[in-house]
Image 1 (spheres, rainbow, N blue to C red):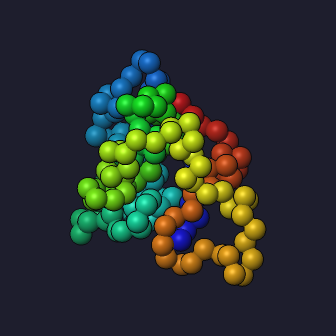
Image 2: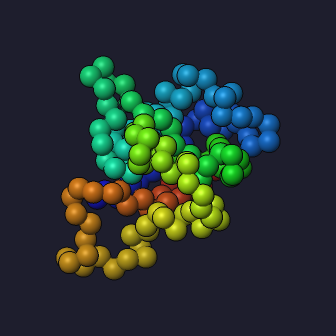
Image 3: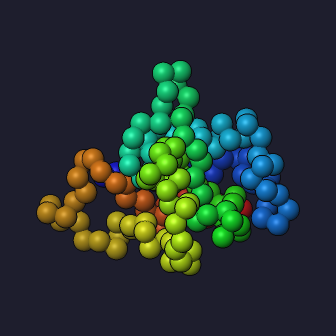
Length: 147
């Protein structure tokens, strides 16, 4: 299990706004820029299962995941805190999550804040397994860069 610390938002995300733009407006070059920032945070691993997303050519293989689904939470489309890299497995991870119904208002409860847990030697995350995402810490340390 890894704790993710989010780097600064890619500059390209500042150009887009909910209500004015759609995800389709983001160019391939800008999606590459977003992937670079996600790779800094996730080290080329799926945010859910930690499978490698790096191909032999060094390019990420997967998709830019909107943790809160765009169709149900469109205001999060360009929100850096809502974006993760995910593998393309249909039976798990982001693709599977997107086919489920869940309360988007409570979706962030799936993300675990390290400050909300007491991490003693017996409760520390194991070196492998699901990722621990600390969005609260990331936004306080790096500043909120929501779009």
